[in-house]
Image (cartoon, rainbow, N blue to C red; front, side, top):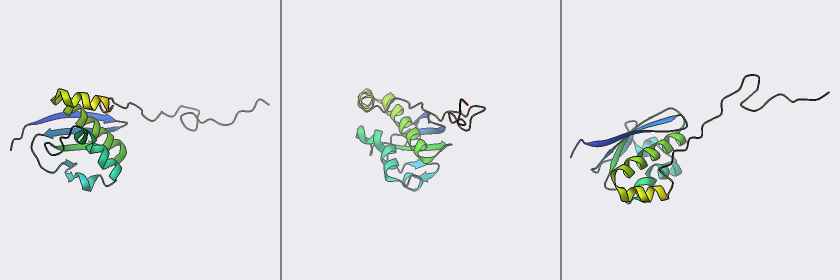
Amino acid sequence: MSDKYIFSVWKRKTATAQVRLFEWNKDSTVNWKNVGEYITRKDLFDTVFSPLKLCKAKDNFFFEVEVSWSWISAQAQAIRHGLSRILAWKEETFKKILKSAWLLTRDSRVVERKKPGLHKARKATQWSKR
């Protein structure tokens, strides 16, 4: 076993994921817990492992992730983006597969900020002419 890994930091909304990808087989962890314990929803579990499944490399790699901020859905998407970027950097064939699946594009949408004088970002009091 080797302690060498590839490191990257990626974001989604306000979630930040620090991903370390190792080339040997072990249980993957998120915030020092097994992935199955940390991410309990099946759709999010599939989201996290989608880059490895597309590249058919699920058995060849394992990852350790420290993720913070935001909710579990944005955290799962940040992890997916980090894994995709590392795999694309690692091998050119992976890059073609992941790019065709749109996994290398960062989703930059965030919550719009509240403006002064309004109730929410765009919601204002009702206006009447007379």
